[in-house]
Amino acid sequence: MQDPVFVKDAFAKIAGRYILTNHVLSLGMDILWRRRVARLVAGLQPRRLLDLATGTGDLAEAISAAVGPGCAITGADFSAPMLEVARARSFAADWMVADALDLPFADGHFDVVTVAFGLRNMADWPAAIREMARVTRPGGQLVVLDFSLPTLPGLREAYRFYLHRVLPRLAGLLTGQRAAYEYLSGTIERFPSGAAMGELLTAHGFARAEAIPLSGGIASIYVATKAAAD
Ligand SMILES: C[S@@+](CC[C@H](N)C(=O)[O-])C[C@H]1O[C@@H](n2cnc3c(N)ncnc32)[C@H](O)[C@@H]1O
Image (tube, rainbow, N blue to C red; front, side):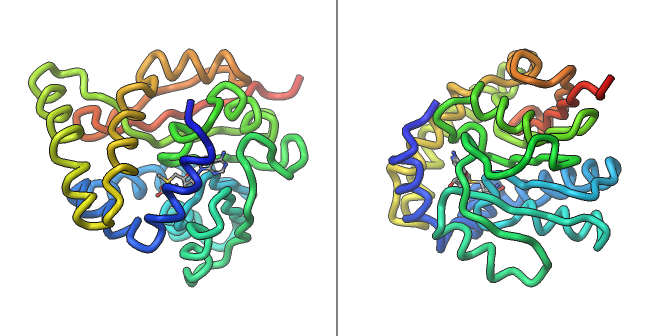
């Protein structure tokens, strides 16, 4: 659970270098993770999709390429500077400034809602999940992509060393905003993953959830399904 004033300010400051910094810090793995989500989403054949906390629109673009023109994509984020970068992209999407905790959409409006590296940054995870469930149609899906901690002991310790000692320094050099990346390391430690995330999703509006670990568990995809209408 995060302070929205700090989060908005942090993303406003790094918006211009966000994409490059992600690719450097993850050694390009973030591109593969988003493509994996995009392929999964294409298999769900959505006609209306919301990419929430869309930021600079990286996931929305990968999804657009995977699903083709038959799907209307909306990208929403509460950071106008991040959305400015998204708006410069060349594919068709509706971009809008909106708070994930109070979305301006009707109940059940979207077939699929996606959120990449966004839920972790929100002020109230249960409330955000309930709001995502509200705008998902019965039988539709929420697909979450986010960091998790590897479960393998050696890898877990090596990753933690990278997360706390290397990443903030490197990102500080790239963006001049080291504090924003110290914040990132802290949020990854506190964010639920695996079965705990599944429980959070099913406690707040979804009927079932499946976890798919990526790259040894450094990141995970969660696919949560809303109960179908009676
Ligand atoms: C790490 S970025 C992820 C951007 C993009 N999804 C990606 O895959 O690169 C997190 C984004 O979450 C947004 N965010 C955090 N809390 C939010 C909220 N309550 N409502 C809307 N956007 C929010 C931030 O503004 C930021 O753009």
